[in-house]
Image 1 (cartoon, helix red, strand yellow):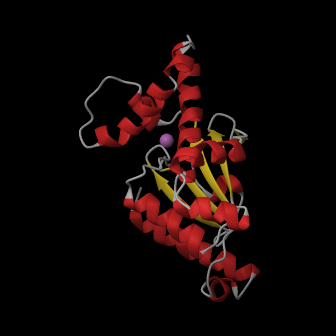
Image 2 (spheres, rainbow, N blue to C red):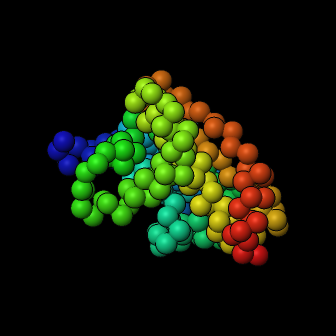
Image 3 (cartoon, protein in one colour):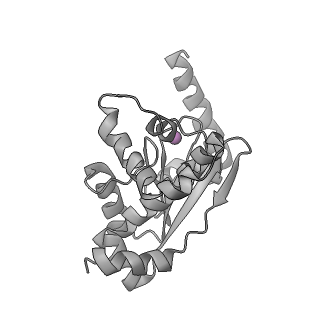
Length: 208
Ligand code: CO
């Protein structure tokens, strides 16, 4: 792709926005008040705003390889802190996706250099749920289930943070686990029992 093409597209986008609302950008520059923090995968096919049909300003977004929330990752932890404490989002969403290269890589026995410590977090998810996963004979189905279980475990990591625990007690913030099915374009709600997870997590990880 010619990079110049991007600037041409940007010019067309600005014109398009201004044609329907001449104050669009001046309004946007006044600040943000998103209700949702979205944590998703960096995969180029899994956009955040577009697949949810939302506009700029509506969702605070964090993306990394395989939508991870490692407890020592300064970037993910800073995003959660800012979104929950300062933007006061009402919902935190962890959105995984089928056909995730990061999850697939974690199912292989291969040295991937700097990616090893990152992907090891997914291997830990596999280990935690290995009985269920090993009972699935079809490799594709096992891989899809690992995508779902990884979302569930990252939701648990979100709940482990003091900010989310305090916001749950103080103003009823909720955490959701979703999967984007690239094959159909549909978002699937994994219907993770957030209150149950909160109770279980707080038994050991209570910080407030
Ligand atoms: Co991915």
